[in-house]
Amino acid sequence: MLPTAALDYSLPEDRIATAPVSPRDSARMLVLRRADPEFIEHRQVRDLPEYLSPGDVLVVNTSRVIPARIQGVRADTMGKVEGLYLGPDESDPSRWRVMLKGRRMRENARIALYDADGQPTHLSLILHHRSESEGEAGAWICSPDGPADLLAPGAIALLERVGSTPLPPYILAARKRHADALSPSERDDRVTYQTVYARADQPSTSPAAPGSTPSASHGAAGSIAAPTAGLHFTPELLGRLAARGVLRVDVTLHVGTGTFKPVECEFVEQHPMHSEWCTIPPDSARVIARARAQGRRVVAVGTTSARTLESFPTLQPALDGTPLEHWTKLLITPGHRWKHLDSMLTNFHLPRSTLMAMIASLLDSTPGTADIPSRGVARLQTAYAAALSSNYRFYSFGDAMLVL
Image 1 (tube, rainbow, N blue to C red):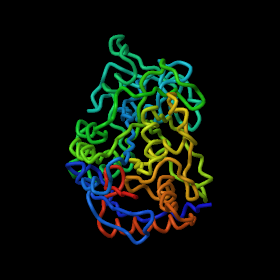
Image 2: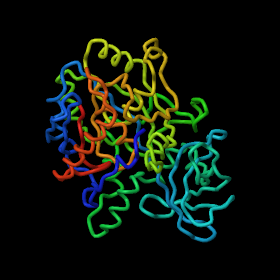
Image 3: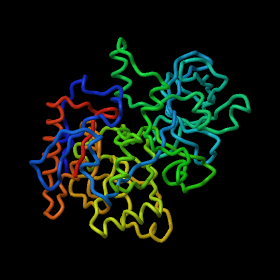
Image 4: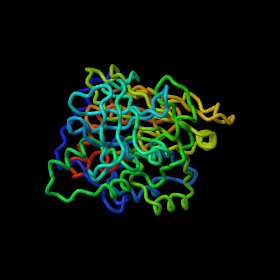
């Protein structure tokens, strides 16, 4: 088993990127090779085409980030309330599941909602009862309330009006600590905290909560955190990759609140892994399977794409025309046998996280050699130390690492 402490490291506060570089593909990129522990190069994401060959397959997560952060006040006490939209209620899709932070939340309380600029709106939330969905302690089932013409378009349209970009807590905290610095606007965040290939018309609709089944009545789904490795791509970089003959396929994983949940157990494998809805379309499965059979590389853009691929034991059902889709609780740690990918582009992750454990697993698993558990952790720590000594930027808006 992997001790959680083995994934710890110290990060100076000024290394937390609070905004992306511009252009996106000018972010730095640390390059490693699974088969060569001594190999390390310092490049930029725009150099990615140099490391890929014609016929290689790039797998991207097209889930779209929704403006899930909400703010308002208790209508009776005017106490400040902050929240995060989690999705529709399983039993009644017109109701919302919302994580709320405020004093003395109670049933039938009314939350008057503000817009992203902190201005009052004509919309509010009425609290019904605590959510009973798995992994959502502290969430409430609520009903949006307001003029009929504002409610009619549905939850996502309402969030576009009253919600704001669900930036990770560590970015918000870092910005608050440096309030004298010029922080990006909400308009900027909505653009930069979204991949250029994110799809509003998701190829699959996710059910309301783990344990339920897909239903179109639940409406379009989305993520409450970005698949951040994809934030580095620009249309120009995607065009250069296509011109080189690199194939691009889509998968979908809707990122949930569990992505921010720290590992608090002594061993990573004891961590209660969160559930996320993921899908592999038939066309994507066919391209991936053909590349694997022909010895071409499959490169996952980010841990969400990798987790989606590895969540299915086989791609066969999709090859026959049936989309692969389910709730995944897959936890990848050293010792995992990778089935569907060879390489990954990823960001630098929070210490003591399941995402670090996943990258350590990939570095453990060197093609053509016997796996040596724990080697991946040591290689990962060496890579992170190199990034720290070379002033790389960390976390969601930070720099990247390419594992070949």
